[in-house]
Image 1 (cartoon, helix red, strand yellow):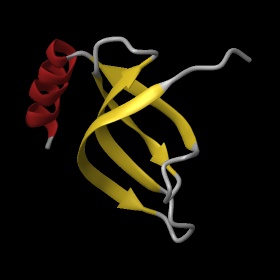
Image 2: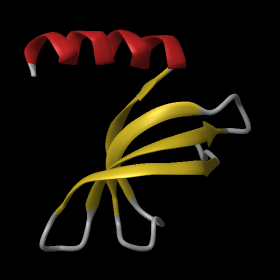
Image 3: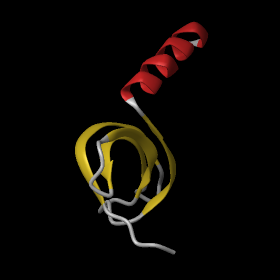
Image 4: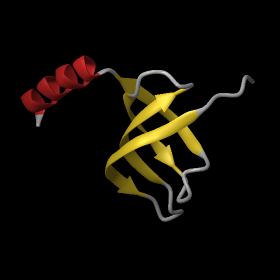
Length: 72
């Protein structure tokens, strides 16, 4: 598997925390020195391990918000 870099530019919020200490978070992350994107995934308490996640551009996040506003 290829190595990759990430930098958490801004921690926006925790959605939930498991008994194991891992938390599902919304963060603004730069992957491989590219423009930062909004990211939802699970993180270990030290943020040195991560689960699978999904990333969004600002435009995609705005569309997701509109969709969620219609169902919540």
